[in-house]
Amino acid sequence: MTFGAIIIGDEILSGKRQDKHMAKVIETLGERGLQLAWCHYLADEPELITSTLRRSFASADVVFSFGGIGATPDDHTRQCAAQAAGVELKLHPEAEAEIRARFGAEITPKRLMMGEFPLGSEIIPNPYNRIPGFSMGDHHFVPGFPQMAWPMMGWVLDTRYRALFDPGRIAERSIIVRGAGESQLIDLMNQCLERYPRLKVFSLPRMEPDRHVELGVRGDATQVPDAINVLQQGVSTLGFQWNDSPA
Image (cartoon, rainbow, N blue to C red; front, top):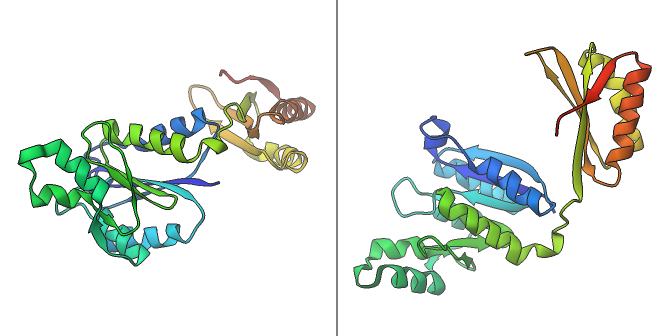
């Protein structure tokens, strides 16, 4: 399966807050032997959110969406998800029970609005304050607050996708090549990719503190040792010096 992320909020795109979700998604998936394939940052614009969700709903991807599921005027995600799926918003009975348990006698219609999800949704428990998120198929919608969102994302993965877990399946190794430019390594990279098509070959040039290229491979852990050996031998044959990249 392909995993994607949608991160919603004007505060991130304006620079008022720094996003922490993408790094956490990568870490959380990686711990389970999974990888993030794509990530979109979206402003609090209903048309943009709806069109993005409509496209991702049409895919087979597993998608985590962060932010915009509250009840304030700048929270549009619940409504946009319903519109993109062509269904109505409706108060989810399990969400209602959780919200009523959270607020007790202080419950209000506006607080119950946070439990209005697209018809057919399933709730995602919120261990922080009991106000749930929701899932629509393989799309999972959680709050923008990390202390809520991250445990909820972990719960979804552990509950829905455990059969996909393969810790240690993905590996990465690289070497530091000195005295070479990227263009001088392209043929070698293509040769490695032809031999190991299930891997990704990458090069990362660095200008400071000293000029070099980090050359490496990432993917199937069983193939990485042989592939990095191909790169090491190839760099030596080209006459460039290299050393292993720090872990």
